[in-house]
Amino acid sequence: MKKNFKHIGYAFLLALSLGSCKKSIDEKFNNPEKTAVVTIPYMFTGMLNNTRVRAEYWHYRTFVLTATADFSQTCFLPNTNTVYQPNDGYMGNRWEDFYHPNGSANGVMALYRTMEVTYNQMSATDKANNDVIMNAARVVLYDQASEMVDCWGDIPFSEAGSLETSAAVKNPKFDDQIALYKSFIAGLEAASTYFKTATLSGQSSKAFTQQDILLGGSVDKWRRYANSIRLRMLMRMSFYDESWFKS
Image (cartoon, rainbow, N blue to C red; front, side):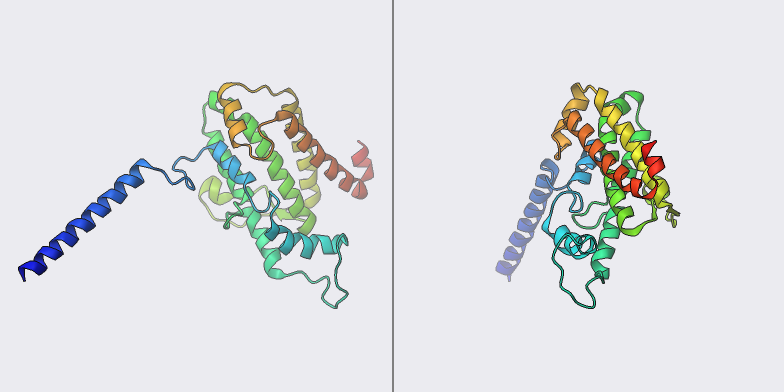
C-alpha cells in the first residue's frame, strides 16, 4: 500500500512540474502564429495575407473559374443546362470572406474598420507614422470592394463593419453601385496623389517595409497599383456614363 501511495505521489509531482514547465514556456516564448498586440501594421499584413487578395488555388478554382470566368467567357465551359448556374456555397463564401474573418480569408472590411478605429484613437504623431499604411489599406479595400460590386451590384459598404466600429450588430444599407464606383475612383486618385509625394523615414518606413508583403514598402509601386485599379474602374464606368468618364 505504501508503495502505491509513493507512486501516486511521484505521478502527482511529475504532473505539477510538467504543468509549471508548460506555463513557463508559454510566458517566455510567444506563439509566432498569434500576436498579443493589435497594431495597424500587423492588421495591414492580415489584409494582404488573404486567400481572396493573394493568388491561391482555392479562390481561383472555386470562384474565379466557376463564376467570373464563366460569365465573362474567358475560359472553357461545358455546354450544359446549368452552365451559368453558380455554386451557391462558393458564391456565399466569397461574399462572407469580404466582410468578416473566415479561416485564411481575413475579412478585408472587418480589418480595415478595426484599423480605422485604432487610427482615430492615435496621437497626431502616431497618425503621421501610420498614414502610409492606411492609404495602402484603402487601395486594397477599394480593389476588393470593386470586385464585389462587379459581381453583385449594390453592396453594403458605408455602414458595413458596425461590429468593429461601435460593437453593435446592425443590418447595413446597400449602397448604390454607381455611387460606390465613383467614390472608389475618387479615393484611389487621392491615394495616388499621396503616394506621389510621400516620403518615409524612421518608424513609418521600417513598419511599412516589414509589413508590406505585397510590394515591399515601395510608395511608387503603390501609386502604380492605385492608378491601375482606378483606370480599370474608369474604363468600366465609360460604358455606363461616357460623359462622366471624359470629365
